[in-house]
Image 1 (cartoon, one colour):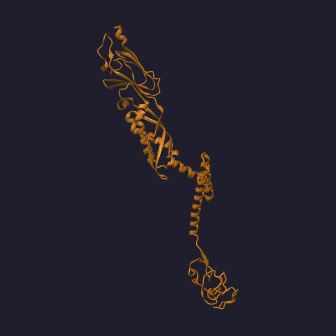
Image 2 (cartoon, rainbow, N blue to C red):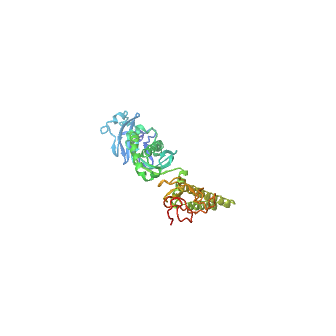
Image 3 (tube, rainbow, N blue to C red):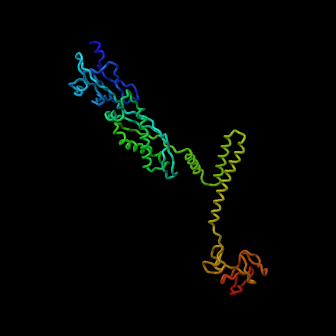
Length: 373
């Protein structure tokens, strides 16, 4: 009888000294069983779950319990036949850690695709942390936990990180924020992920909280383009400044190259910077010349009119010029008549009354007789 009593357990407890165990199965050494009137000790942030023949029989919160049939009716289903006055309990005991586990890391294995208003289709990578807690031990035991002796945080985190990243992808898409505005909304996006996680994790007896987005980054080529655009916005859009900027970059890259091709590389960089500046300057100058309209002065009323006009849009006078001596048509700016050699004025002197072209020395109009001042 003495040997048999040594094989029965009188105290059932778990002194948790770990930081990552979610479920701990109370060990039953060979030949040992729980006895009627044993003491069960459940500490704070713990829950004890009794399993009998594969089914959850009862759950105990923090406290100290005397396992007796008169106090706990379900024990009658677990008791075997008494042996020498000692009734043995046929059950397995699992301790579930109900504290909140903080700082669990998450990260995107593959980039998150999104459509951005500024850059079009881009890929995002991100990382951060979250917290998890067993909110319903019974549901957790049924849905997640198997029969392994120890179930750690890493085991469950590896299973549900992909679910959280999927929820984050949906939240970012629904927010319709540009990539440049995401950093200012990390806290709001994290709260939305927590709210969306309730529907996914509550049926499993889990609660996700403190979802923190530490960083969402763009691809390296897009970040380089942003850096270039930021630099240009700081230095301005003047062509001289742009050329100096490109030349300075070429000199810096050449200085970093200790090989013999440094001067050649510098020349190529300077040439490229100057050439780009020249091309841009020519494009701007061409656009300005295209926009500039050549105008002339009407020979009758003096209005400013397009250079190729045949008639004045103000007074209707013809803009064709002729020699005041022989009447031969002449072009604007001619100094002599090509027919008679009459000397003409560059200013194209005309009669202020009828608009007749006159010579520089004319004192009266040959058509209307108006005196020329």
